[in-house]
Length: 366
Ligand code: SF4
Image (cartoon, rainbow, N blue to C red; front, side, top):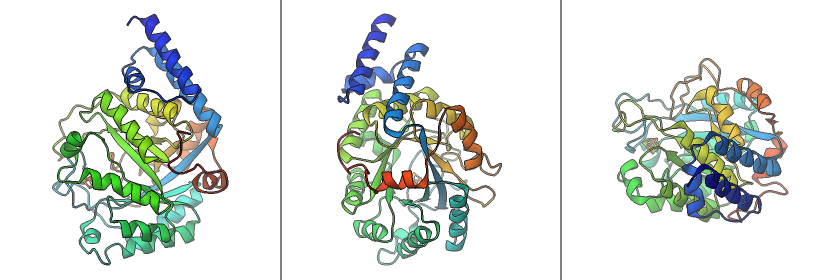
């Protein structure tokens, strides 16, 4: 296909998206293979236009607390896998988490994300292991009065029910790929279906869900199109794509670092396919320096805002920009302004999460 034909094909796809027609697998694969600068500009511009229709110039800001870096699993891409003896390990006390969440809330975030590995201390005691997490969710909700997201891994259904009853609003659990063969390579020994079902169960208990894919871990463009279809089936209210960062001490340490454009193209496709859903621009891959690019591709949530100098780590990047306070609300605001964007109010975010006018769970694309 020559350049002019590519331009016409892209224009047709963008028009379909503007009419809220479903994009086909071929449409998505075509977009993911774009490398022409002017066509990519058109794509990103259309993604921003769709974001503007649904969210105007408002951006949501998520505070991130990685509360335990212990994990029983051995995901090949992850620095915190159990077999990695070079990994940073800590388990934060409730008082430390409450203090950090309070500081985040005061700084202006809209949500507190409590993330952890599948900590054996919780998972091995099936009767009471999660009691402390459930208590913590209740406490953070009371103290900050902000929605709480929990990312504790593939927890049993009754735990999801208790987390919802304690006030959790979101459950994040990333499949990372929806190709079961690749899943087994990335998450050896883990049950693909059980992980996916956990999100369906969470929905049934009234939790909003976030689904995510990792970019540059051996997937094909068709795999990504399939993942987007799985996100649609799930009805995930937040959908994320994140570039893989090779980490020391892991089996994928020497794996080539993927083309940064790939994540941006997927963000734009997600916006065309799911115009009214939340799409993160993470600070966890390239820090503050990568934020503008992700917002320009159509993202509308800044994730991984971490309080500095409290011994808290990121996930894909454990330390980048944290202790020099470049993953804070104050650091993010000038980038939003440069992009012609501004933070939403807490009330606007809460409306998305369940107030009047909130999206119907598992509903159509928008
Ligand atoms: S990705 Fe999550 S489940 Fe897998 S090893 Fe890392 S912390 Fe554990």
